[in-house]
Length: 316
Image (cartoon, rainbow, N blue to C red; front, top):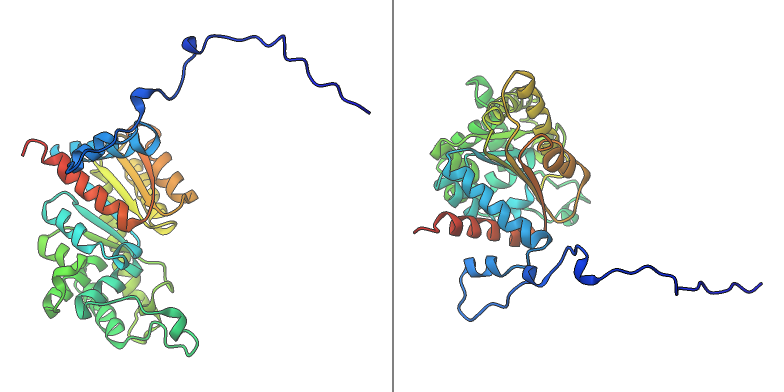
């Protein structure tokens, strides 16, 4: 059976010049000249998609900082493992990052950096004989710090940070936890039992881990209660911290705190459901704005830090 091709002669047309178009030449990127500045680079980006969103995010973060509003960073351990501690520490020392929220793996890698200047074992080489996660110092130091913190009614982040300072480890200057303790910046640690190598050590106390991590959740809720006009950045946590953030937000709203106009952003290699839903979309549905930035942390976080400092020093 032969099918007759459609006759196209009756198509109704309109003028290209009368049509709304999402892209025009005014939105195009601009080639950079030699010896251009970072600010020139940002201004050269095409005004499309992330080329529009990233500079806008930087402006919103700068506005929040200038207004004295909090900028809290939630993070997974990969941020530490790709070498970003010095950049985050710089933002902490400048009072730009006002709080950190971590998963349990973060304290493992951060403390190992403080103690030995190295971290991140090759799991495939040691899992076969059951040696993965069995570093003696890591278990003893962290579990000891947590148990001491439980006795002194501290949260886990404060307990570990202050213990690192007390022990005067050689690389404390590269530690987020030690720096936060030195600066008096809150660090909260949100643990899922069994996910971290220190939980397999005999020195681990489930009661102390639970008590100090739950105290940190309550501290984190206090921070989120004051988030109005500020910003929350989720960097590299696909499940745990987006869930913690959403629960903290609903709690403080339930308690009567007005937190309905702030900025959120998620940074990760790929798009995941929970960060998009629990950080970017749902929390800002009634006000503010959320952003999703896809890319490698070792590129995007330095770009974020440098661009934000450049924006804040616009009048320098």
